[in-house]
Length: 280
Image (cartoon, rainbow, N blue to C red; front, side, top):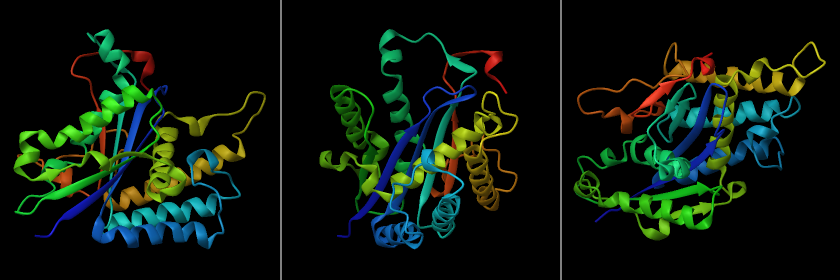
């Protein structure tokens, strides 16, 4: 019996943005492609002799060529079907209402759980097969108390007990839900840069001008240049792609939640009020 393994790296960014908040992102790679994906992403940093961790906050004019090549490598892998990418965020103007104190306290983990549960269509990842598939999760260090993080990871582990996951023989071992160091996981570095670029543009930080200045700072210009390059790659996948809305989903089976190489999900609370001052 053959056993498939899926590796899923997840990160989060910008909990509270002026226009968009609660960014979550993930990169999924099948075991059979893992070596090639790792080698090609690490090769970019080695080519440029870049010895730092690739992170959005580290983008400057001096290293902009490194980050453009790095994002090109990621999107080349997406185009070739070796990597799947999912992004989730929330429009700040749509504010959830009727939440209990517990819901508010657990908002970060609850949103993360929804991202894991739905964005990749993992319940559909094993259709047509009679063999099991196993998923390994790698979370960048979760910024919360250990006890709350442990509860969150237990819920991720328990996804395999959902009827649709059991029918599809999608399994998660308890030891395969882990927090890891992003400096040692190139996929987490790639998702950090991508999430940062999207949050930067959606919150219009590309327009920021320092106090007392008449022009944007050089670092802001470099980040805007990197975002524009990323957007061009996205337009190659989806012409006229709008980064602020959810990617379309096929009906009735929602198959492309799993099959699509790249997707955005603009999360909308079940009940919400609108703050007009938080719209662009």
